[in-house]
Length: 178
Image (cartoon, rainbow, N blue to C red):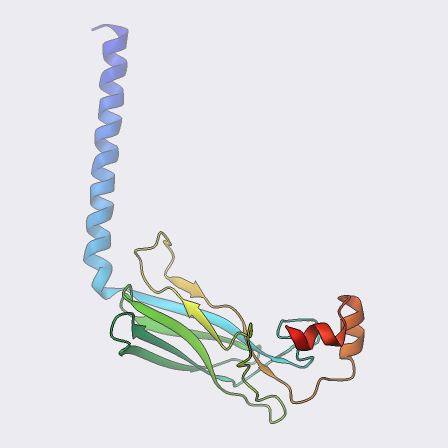
C-alpha cells in the first residue's frame, strides 16, 4: 500500500468515527428532550438611587418574590408558572420542567420585602421583566439560564446618591430622562 493510500484510509476512519459520534449525540439529545429540566437563576435588588441600573449603593433584597411565566408565542396561553423567593443575598434559583421552545418566558417581580422599596418600574427603557430562553434548540449546552438582574425602586432616592452621580458623571436630570 502506498503512503497516500494509508493517509486516505486513516482520514476515512477518523471521519467515520466522527460521524458516529454526531449521530449518537443527536439521538441522546432527542431522547432527553422531553425530560429536560432547566435551572433559572438571577438577582433582585433595591435601586436606592432610582437610576434603573445597579450601582454601589444598590441593596440586594432578601425574601423578594419573583415569578417565571412562559406563554405560547401563537396563542398567548400560559404554559408554565414557577414562583420563587430570593435568598439572603438577593439571589434566586427556580427549576423549570420541560423545553419551552415555542414559548416566551419571562422572569417578573411580584413582591418586595422592603416597605420603602416596592415600586416596579414601568417606564420606557425600564426593566420590569427579564426574558429567558428555555430550550435546548438554541446552541446553549448548559441547562442553567441566567436572568438579567431585576429591581424595585425606592420611593425617594437616598441622600448618598449625589456622590454616586458625581462618580458616574451623571446629573440628576440624566437619570430622570432615561
